[in-house]
Figure 1: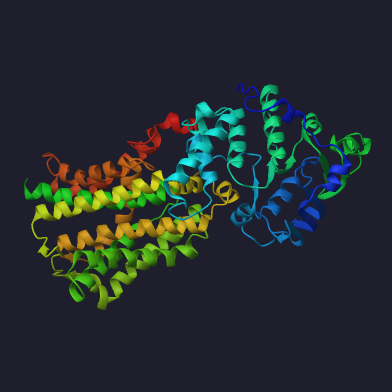
Figure 2 (figure 1 turned 60 degrees about the vertical axis):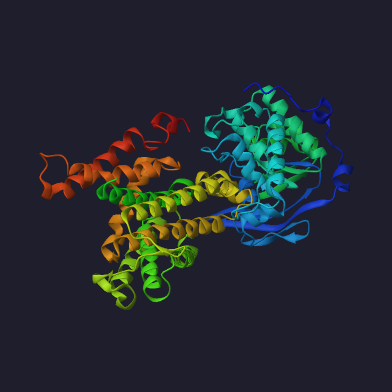
Length: 273
Length: 295
């Protein structure tokens, strides 16, 4: 896919918020306290405590099996933690069904994307935009037209404008990634949890992705990303939490974390865990 | 038009209603059920009961049947839809068997194995529907209205929600879709509208018994949907027309032994299903194998 950098300003691409002071000043959006989850004999996450701050991009980094996706599943209600609390804007999330948590303002993408492959690209976005599960949506014809216009704008922004009528399953890999992002943009979520959203993107597509993300963060969206590519993490993160064997073993600004030889050794499998 | 053709036309319409309504679940919600004939039967028995005991007004009978089937489907769906995929198929099979047992044993309401006879003719706008042509127009009208309802539903936000659940349930949940509610509403809509077929059937034959509402009928209607094309509007209607006409067409083939038409029909159904699954899994109207595989 040749995505270019349509609809995204250069300023947005470089508008990182690196300072520790910014982290301290930002409001707390999500507070995870002492969360643990065990699957049979495997302790997937253990006593995790982590704060996600408003308007920042926080990356979860760690080797495979560190518990990153399990933490996402716990936040979004797909998995119920054995103990601990998860508070979103002061409201407890534990025990709520995933759809309810999504409507509270937390949306996620999946590592395997999970698009609605037999629906058109436009319908994928519209489906994300229509929160009610009843036979009709509120607002009548005018609201319907507004939703269609907004869907078209989002698709243009993500470089998928020309593919609105195409079945999602027939898109290329990079286009799948952008549709996953377009779907989450169509919601009114205030916190985005993105599971490896940039994996496999070519450089132009990655530039577009990074620009889109920064643009959204400037609009007040808080983002938490799971990512394995250290270049991407360096380029995009305001904050990093390093997980290993189900625990958060370090948290801080990207420079602090990625220059710590002990953490890098763990990440590349050369050091003690 | 001959009475024979009108008779075939009425049955095509009845089965097309059943196929269209089953397609809401199979084609759009991705829920495979073997209990559709049970709701066809509930519609027919409620129609017979209301027509014989309460009111012969077609509107009253239709409302009573649709509401009863819809409400019962919600009561059944709420616990049943907690299981997914092949487990739900098993649960739906159990529901079908349970309903057939009730139809057979609740003699005071259903007439037991002997069924109910002498169901009075329907009345609407002060007149009575009595001739084959009038019944054909009634069946065609019901099919047209149901096609319109389902067509509007599919093209709207609820249709998108249904298809989202069908394509990926966990992604739909993550986008704020109340999957349990969506499936329950789909089951209520599907079953409620299937009851309309039961009403037309009961009135048209003036006789119903449990033999019409068994698992065989559920499987036949499912075959109509699959052969016609799941997830399409025209497919189930086409599938219903083809499979309804098949036994009639076979009776005109002179070299076939007339006493074996039923067995030959079953063989052809099975063969058609196997060939469709191999060469055209999307059905006659749906996407072919290559397109499906690309997705």
